[in-house]
Length: 113
Length: 117
Image 1 (cartoon, rainbow over the protein chains, first blue to last red):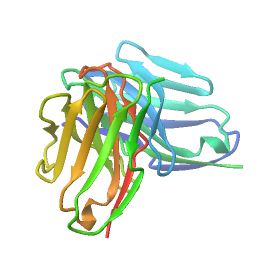
Image 2 (cartoon, each protein chain N blue to C red):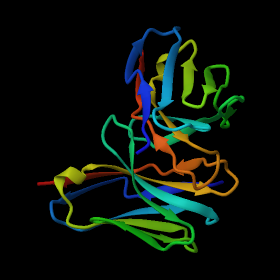
Image 3 (tube, helix red, strand yellow):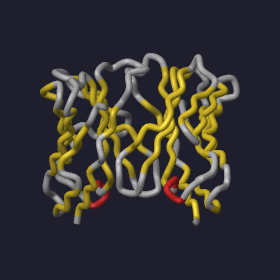
């Protein structure tokens, strides 16, 4: 069964700290992996997309890495800000699934001023 | 960028009534739309995949007679929750992509909060 797990479920850090969110997946035959941000009561905002042939992607203070062999991805947030407070979801796309995404449970991040 | 809208954003209804949620791709043609539900503090669970002009494909455990999905055009898919009950209260999110292929970007709607009294 294809499952995606995110650790930790919740994280609280002081402003300015660098932090890492973790995502693991049971089936390593992925097509791509995405990181999303979700604010309370809102839809999803795509942050980074990593294709299976890539090792990492960067956007501003965000860096996502992918290690297919170990079934893991990390989202690194540098110099965290209160505005980064949100739930971060990782989602995996597999071959021959018609574009379906399998989501992890999310990590709820709180950055305190 | 591609925009997906949902209507209504929030709905409260009495138990036993039916509720229709619309998902629209505003500036692109969406061959495929996905419907997800999300309970508080939980992740998105895929309910069904709808392709324009054909019947939706439901995930295991999702009642197709309770959650009716119609994708009659390339810009509109609807989800109707029939005979809604309090346990159907949830956050429903749709996404749309141009093709039903891995790698095609899914654009997500803002979600609809359904509360059944």
